[in-house]
Image (cartoon, rainbow, N blue to C red; front, side, top):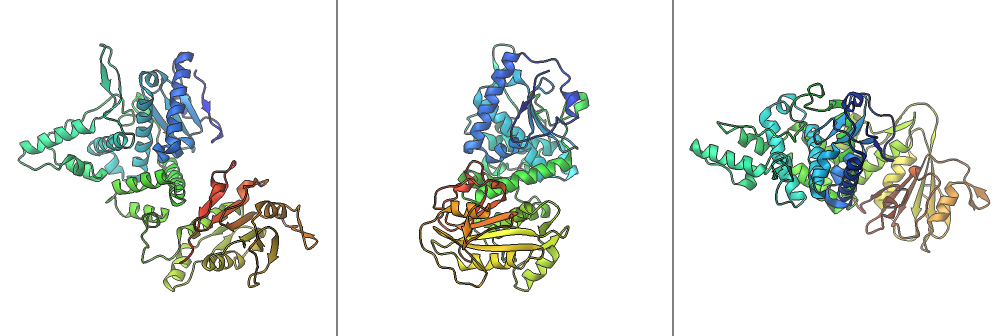
Length: 476
């Protein structure tokens, strides 16, 4: 049995459903190693910008497993919350590096299709299955800058293409419509959105679905060797997590994440109310630079609420009450956090960099958010080269050089200010700064939240270990 490639990004045991899938003859160790190196190189290229969505999705897979149980590659998503990448090492060594990237991109994109288009009647329609293949492979060819599909040996000394060729399907579509006396769309309009491809294929009278042995997810089930587990609930959670992470990266200024997310949203246009709500929740309007008339909360504010909630777990959580929040917004007020859970109070330390100008809107909103939240004990700090505790309403002076280490030492109880140390242990530390000072490494980076003001340096996001980090807007 080939050993699983355990990645540091995940933990936990192998999902039980994999045991039957892996009960196959072992692959040659040399082939497995060659395939593993090719797979790792492909995923590295995704991570440096070719596909942020694919990069994040594969980091969610706890195990990367070489196995002959699948003919190509697939992501197993099981009902116990497990997620694993399966790949056939013999197939991978038949491909070059770009071919492996194409196959992995295809599988990642197919999972996002199933996440976005959850209507069972739609997903079980063979025409939509073909439309998904056409759409996914079209995007893969464009994004990976390939002239055509990857190929593998066919056994006769030639090479055959992997998967469904969107150009070939388009030619069949165009010829079919012309025989009917109808006008086909130009190729770029034909592939404009996923649902455009689906709608145009349904206009065909004689649709011969080109089934490829390389599309393992299209037909069958694990029992008959034709598919892999794709539990809907686990897939929904996984898809949401990936899109959330990519949106955060895009809103922090990552151009690759922004480009891919906007392209994905454009391709999903017309997908219905559920998709509209999903993109609205993610903050697509903010990414596009459009301010919705019905909402006043900036993305960084929503992001801070989400992250702060996670820092204050477990047991005691700050939550955003949707109904109450909607009423407050309708009345022109800012939303407030409410608290659920046991009575233990949580400690939040908010530190403002006074070496430069702090946006008044940021200070006011944080004061409202943290200072008046039930169940939270808040402490306030101004800092430049030194730290100065204060209470909201006091004037805090600054202007000298910035030293983050003093804040770290104070928050961790090592630095005395006016003869006193900070005796509480903070559950979360919010740093509002332009980021321009030597980087620091707190003892518990997971508790730190960095709000970087306009034009600042978001080094905490790139630091080892990374800390929660987001840029904030200077006005409302």
